[in-house]
Amino acid sequence: MSDYDDVKQVRLCAMYRRVSKGGKTYFTGKLGYNKVALVQTSKTTDDGVEIWSMLLSEVPKETEKPAVDTESKLDDEMPF
Image 1 (cartoon, rainbow, N blue to C red):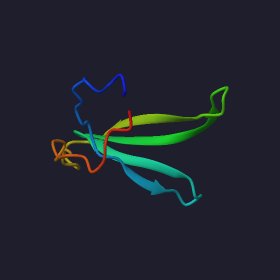
Image 2: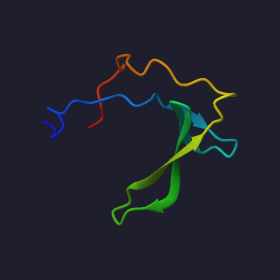
Image 3: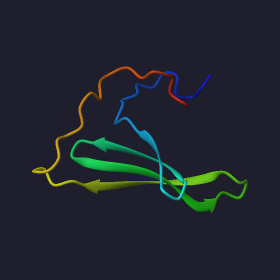
């Protein structure tokens, strides 16, 4: 059992797996009027675990619609 079993969880956004021209995997999504990107850094923890950074960038409201469907059920269980 996880420490998070009894904690209410809220889905913030969906993330989509992408591959850069250089072959690196990253994830993108939208959070309201913001774009979200999850990118792997070149660093690791002392025990070799990859470190990822989440980046948030604002999109002008005239050019972008807000993300929708944050209430839908996930296809799989939460990973924690």
